Amino acid sequence: MSSRSARRAIGVIAAVLAFAFGTLPAPAEEDLGPAFASIDLATVEGVARVEGEWRYSDARIVEVPFNGPGPEGQPTGPAGSTYDVEPKAGWADYDDSAWEVIAPTTLERRRSTGRVCFNWYRIVITVPERVQGHDPSGATLVLETAIDDYAEVWVDGELPRRLGQSGGSVVKGWNAPNRLEVGRNVRPGQRILIAVFGMNGPISGSPTNFIWMRQAVLGFHRGATAPRAVEPHEVNVDVVRLDPRIDELVPANPKLFKLAEGFEFLEGPLWRAEGDLLFSDPNANRIYRYSDRDGLSVFRENSGYAGADVAEYGQPGSNGLALDPSGRLTIAEHGNHRITRTASDGSETVLADSFDGKRLNSPNDLVYRSDGSLYFSDPPFGLPRFFEDPRKELEHSGVYRWAAGRLTLVSRDLEGPNGLAFSPDERYLYVTNWDPGKKVVMRYRVASDGSLTDGRIFFDMTGAPGEEALDGVKVDVQGNLYVSGPGGLWILSADGAHLGTVRTPRLAANFAWGDDGRSLYLTARSALYRLPLMVGGAGLTRQTRP
Image 1 (cartoon, one colour):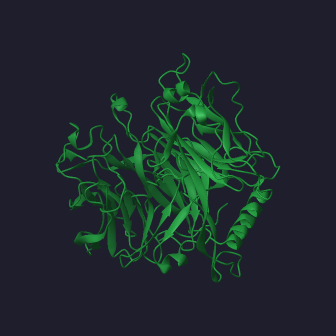
Image 2: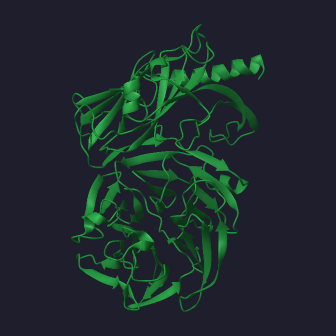
Image 3: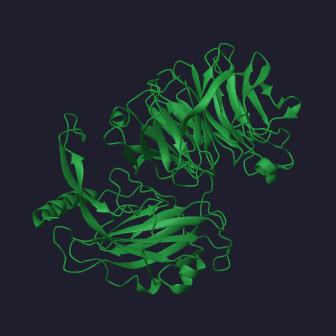
């Protein structure tokens, strides 16, 4: 990089940081009171207590291509160049194995290159069984750290920010400490990734010194344990653009908003005409309801099972949710091995619980066709021991069709049939496969009698890195597919091309179109997000958010 380019880069970064260093207060936090225990991560004993190790790397400024502002003020104008920071070590999937391991007692050592410089400190902590004689189960874990001179703090791959925020995950001030929650309702053995981005400052003053960490202390507090809605706010999102067609779907300056957090494992989102979203937490055996207007509430307890052996199940609750053409809620119940439909008066009808005299495995996802027929997937993933579970009666995993009280097996091609979605014209049914050895999206032609024919692999992700297989799938009005795949949300064209991948802090298991039809709601492990897009969802009547 030329000296002129370097000066331009520094000027850009200085302007951004000047905006970031506002004096508005940090968002309101729960009154946690004093910590009942703490761990000093600047000591050998403290780091050993959390089974961690500090890893370190300098960061550098690099020149990258970027478009100038277009008529709407977004980066859609003439091609040009700008500057970025490497490495992108805040993301949870970043590989720091080649980084230097530093002793916790050396965090105060001056590091990086001096003057205008940046660096990274990363550590993965494991919540201990006991902390200073206390059981940490259910605690809220708070990190307090201070970087000389400025810091941003990523937790499990996420960097949240609110308008006017000062401190927490973003810069607090010159040599001011950052204090933020890094875990809520934690459990022993839980692993949490913390990545601290350090900056030397003041930027425009080009200081004649270096970066160092003044402190890093974990505090364990007694706090609320229930999931909570948060003020909708931005978090990091990255779009890997592989085909120009993605620019018509995902904005040039995409935004991902966090809506709620603190769940066990989210699935099955469903947008309703009332202007709210229902979604399942199969691990917690609940269905939740969310709206911007009313926040978060429990919609149904024991959503999938209430048997005496419920404690043996990892995911006893509901998974997929859908509305039939009459607006009745239809639920895939893991532990009960069945599909049920609930009428407006609360009465419940079992649509399917067995096939050929044998109990279903654990119905997973479901989708209605406009003629009222219901298709659902039935892998054994809701059973405690999956394929080896003694409760499993069927020899196969299947995709079924229910219509007029009759259940038909329409496919048994896959070991782990999972997400289901119709093409906009309903001529095809797409089925994802949760199988690390066969990460494929299948496409079937829907015959006039509702059976599936001409099954073929539409897209194969088996070679993609990562342990994740395929989960949820949705389709937009143009026929593009949105698939939960390895490393993110894969966008596939109707002709089978990989247009790009949307990377989010937590991998989304499933999605639902909502709001005016152009927002995609993401159920992503412990959090709920919303991703505004430029195209509408198939099968969803456009509505206005209340």
